[in-house]
Length: 270
Length: 369
Ligand SMILES: Cc1cc2nc3c(=O)[nH]c(=O)nc-3n(C[C@H](O)[C@H](O)[C@H](O)COP(=O)(O)OP(=O)(O)OC[C@H]3O[C@@H](n4cnc5c(N)ncnc54)[C@H](O)[C@@H]3O)c2cc1C
Ligand code: SF4
Ligand code: SF4
Image (cartoon, rainbow over the protein chains, first blue to last red):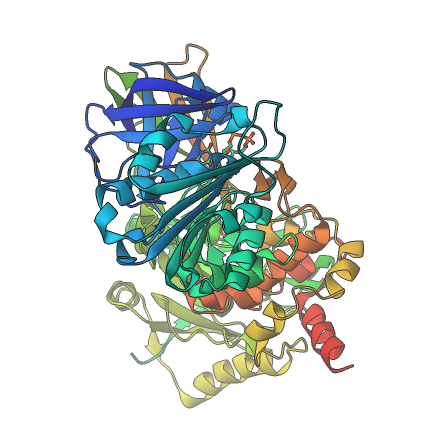
């Protein structure tokens, strides 16, 4: 499968090591619909190709929005791309956050660090269909305030009646919000546990503890989803890299129900 | 279709007919002390009069006292290298305005005839068919090569010490998935019984000089295949094997095997069903041309599971667990069958002789003790 060329329209700096790329279709590419939680393989010409989730609005497929943390050669090359330059795209791939199926329920979104990027399409979906849901809570944590993503949008999300509760591990003196891990935020969100659907994305330990904590508070494990990350070369089930026990993260995931993952992610080095 | 008899010297004609039909004939041949698959021009390129002696961690060629063409079993190579090449450039691109333009010449799909495919190897090809063509996405190159490939199967008339196809229900008799199937009988006379399994096989068979099989010839052929099965000593109890491995993720056994395993990846390279690969993207010095290469990879390589922050599988114990559990267990969940056909390659070509059948036995024993 050949990468299709998309054109970088904007390169927006989010934090010291994270940028958001806004892409529009190049010569032969055509916009394709995607569901929240799906990902594309993004190809930095000659440098390499890596899986990156959509972080934009699924209601507007005319452009692609990806939020990328620079952690190595390929993500560094992607983060450097300037408006007008080309980026290769294959996708969309993978399973999605079933937010559209949760009408009438409370929505709990819990994210750690860059994990908010794959969840922002859920927020977008909720914003477009706010009346479909009851209470909506975003619990978001990062190591320090400077690493929080999309902070400029929090106010408008709050205006649409989304509770945005934020925490950091290390707080400077002027920090007025919470300090501690994401799990400690659960009690600060207002929602009915029995009618809540939860979407979790972040480091595996964060997802594990958050899912367990939500379950102990009464959120149904079957209504809790997490998104998994593994090394991935092809995204179509051929390269074998992304296996986790019985699952191929690229095809069966990246979004799984919590019960599907619970027994696998607690096995070390699986 | 009724089996026919093909005199041994007519093997030459068979290979000739395939070549006339545009096939590149590949088959077993002796190189550097092992039987490997390579191009063959005719029967004399086959390992005539050779046999192999295999054991965990050991492989040796020996002279036979007859002129058998197929008097050995499987070596370090498998047919996967022809349908799923070890190293392949997938494409070359250049930037052209607002798009990428493909600049490599479209390559012609090679048309192979595989000479001497064993029953377990047909099972392995079918397993890779499911991996590359049986799901939501199809690997076009694999599909094209596989469709063109003409399979001349050979029934095994002997087993190596490392073979366990009987346990895995894949051999030694070839039952389907072939264009032509041969059974070699060497004795007072030297002949093959030959059957066609497809139209293109029937067409070739019809062009060969063959005779009707008599009862003695049929029974001589059947006896040899039966003896191959009966002489097999290695076994695996496959009852509940999928569940067995998946409930032993935390077993101490993985640490024990890791004390011997070198994480060398030989087992995965030799295995006819292993399909993992990696890609490398490169650009030329001007940065205007880029290409993507795909190479076989192995779950034993440290970078295989690398994600930001480190490898997921840091220890050899976790890599061996991944490999063996995938082969014998999670493959069922993913592709509806075992990932092991019982060919024994991983046992023979493991430098320290680790034997997965023995590991299964230990695992069962560990549960009952
Ligand atoms: C489904 C999915 C969605 C993702 N979404 C995002 C996203 O929205 N934003 C974002 O910043 N990152 C995301 N990632 C992680 C991102 O793919 C990696 O950070 C990236 O592959 C690192 O490549 P690199 O060459 O820059 O760095 P290196 O760390 O040097 O990577 C070398 C190679 O290892 C592999 N690799 C390394 N880290 C990872 C990783 N964490 N996950 C998978 N493969 C890895 C890649 O094949 C890469 O080519 C996602 C990963 C997956 C699996
Ligand atoms: S796991 Fe070993 S015995 Fe089984 S098919 Fe692969 S190489 Fe052959
Ligand atoms: S089991 Fe044997 S062949 Fe496989 S990686 Fe370990 S030492 Fe190498």
